Amino acid sequence: MEKGRRKMTAEWAARMSRALNVPWYLLFVPDGLPLPMPEDAKFIEDRSEIALLVFWKGLSEEQQDVILAMIRGMKIQGSPREE
Image 1 (cartoon, rainbow, N blue to C red):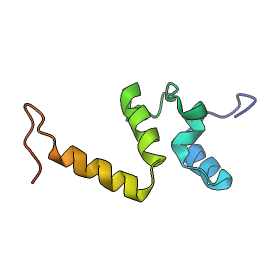
Image 2: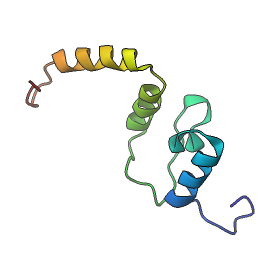
Image 3: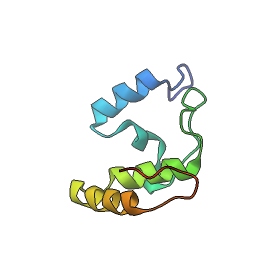
Image 4: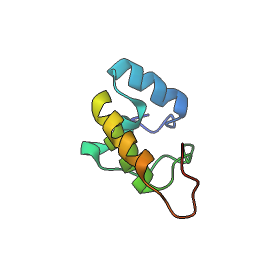
C-alpha cells in the first residue's frame, strides 16, 4: 500500500486495525478530525456523521448512556418519537 501497489480496501483496513489493535475508522482519522473516506468506503459520506462516530467511540459506556437518554428525550420535527 505504501508504495502504491495495493489499494486500501475494507479487508486491508480490518487486517491493519487488528494488527494495530485500533478501531478501523481511526486509520482514516488524524487526531479526531475526519478525512475523506477511500472510494470503496462510501457508506458514510457526511463528514459530520464521521465526526459524530469518532466522538461516540471515544466516550465511556456511562457517557454513551447519558447521551442516549438525552437523545431519546428530544422531539425532532418530522420524525416519530422513540418510545
